[in-house]
Structures are given as C-alpha cells and as structure tokens.
Amino acid sequence: MRRINGTALVVAALLATLAALAFPLWSYADRTGTGQADLAASTVSTKWGPLSAVDRDLLVKVRLAGLWELPAGQQAIERAPSQSVKAAGDHLVVGHTDLDARARSVASQLGVELPNQPTPEQQGWLRELTASTGTTYERLFANLLRRAHGKVFAVIAQVRNSTRNALIRQLADASNQTVLDHITMLEATGLVDFDALANEAADGATASPTGPPPPAPGGQVPVPAPAAPTGTQTFTSMPSGPPVGEIGSPAARQ
Image (tube, rainbow, N blue to C red):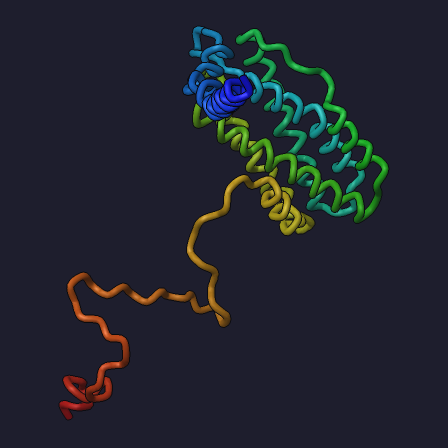
C-alpha cells in the first residue's frame, strides 16, 4: 500500500510539473494578433475613413495643448522681460488659436467629445509659471513648453504615419507644422536645457541605441581593421620584406 501511495504521489507531482510548464503555451496561444484585434475593436467607420482610438487621442491632445499653452503664451507676452520669450509666446497664441479651432471642427464632424479644462498636471504648470518672475520665469517657460511640445510632436508623427482618416491626417499635418514652429521659437530663446531633454529621453528608452561608435580622442573616428578576404593567406606576425614605399613607389623609381 505504501508503495502504491508513493507511486501515486510521484505521478501527481510529474503531472503538476507538466501542467505548469504547459500553462504559458496555453495562455499565450491565442494572443497572436492582439494588436490587430485591439485596432479593430477601437475603430469606428466614418465617411472620411476609419477612426481609431489613436486618432481620437490626437484630437484630445491637440485640444489639451491649446487649453494650457494659449494662456501660457499670453502670459509670456505680458510678463516676459526678454523679447525672444515674448516672441515665443506670440507664436504659441497664434498657433494654438488656429489648431484649437481645427481640432474642434474635426471633433464635431467625427463626433468626438473634447475636454474643456487642462489636465491637473497642465494646471500645475500654469500655477508654477504664475508664481515665477524674471529670468526664473523665462527659463521655466522655455523648458516646460519645449518638453511638452517634444512629447506631442512624437504623437503627431505616429498618428500621421498610421491614420486612415483623411480629417485626422489633415489635422496631423497642421499640428506638425505648428508644433515644429513653436519648438524652433522656444529653442531660439537660448534657455532650453538640452541635457535635461536628452536625459529624460534616455530614461524613457526601452532599447539600446544603435549606430557607429563614438569618435576617438582628438576627433578621429576609429576605423575597424578590414577582415582578411576569404581564401587569402593571413599572417600571425609582420611579414618580412622591404619597407613600404621602396618597391614601386615614386621614390624608388627616381
């Protein structure tokens, strides 16, 4: 009896182990194409083309950008000590006035509901700006707005690349031009902290960058030694022979 019970326990343990190993295969077997399924489930038909959740998200983001960047730009015109920051503020007001009107028109045609208040985070940024003065205000303005524009710039590019809706495509084109103009004006103030932007981007990266190696000290780009051609002789030590330039060189023929 003990022997039978022991065998039963061993068999049960083996079955449990096999079940545990097989569970990931069962649980993920039906997940192929999940992205496609999500896209189909979140997309609605319109006469301007399919409207996805990502498309609707762009509409919301453009509207939210205008809800806080318009008052921020107006504040910069009124309070900034330097002309470059005032000019950046003016571009924000003009650009987002136009974009906001476009976003509301497109949303109305597509039946998308838009927010009427900035997010709590955006409201916090406006409070920070209101509480600052002088050069501190200008530096905060340039960097808050530059960071925000950089983030929405990436969203616009993603939507412009993938949208199948003609109205969203037009909005993405207009948004791309406006946001790039604002980025240029903010950087022209000379107050943007590019190191902070690079570090923030690095913190959010999910993969290691690829590309050529960095330059060697002195600015010379290191060049890897070429591999020996297939079928040719290779040497483990320096081959003997005349110094370079003695045979066949211009000096040798003189």
